[in-house]
Image 1 (spheres, rainbow, N blue to C red):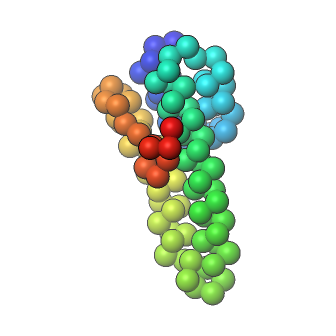
Image 2: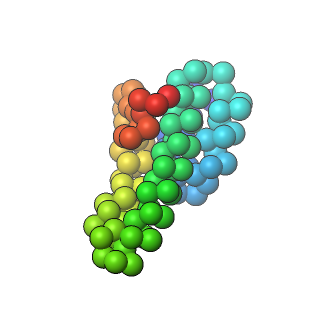
Length: 101
């Protein structure tokens, strides 16, 4: 599969299979850039899940409500930005976890 479309699928997987697709692409791909992106996508979903969970817990006392809204928006917007960048064939790293990998 072409690298461009593999990246698009990995980014888009945040909306339908945020764990399964990055793991599959990591296992079957020979391209190091696709593997790196798959790990970033998986880490991003994991970190955002934790941040949303903590924010939801803290929203009981109204401290976490703004964070819950921001992290919820990021969970939707960041993969869309990734899809657009992949279609333009521009190298792009996920925020927060991009430098970890």
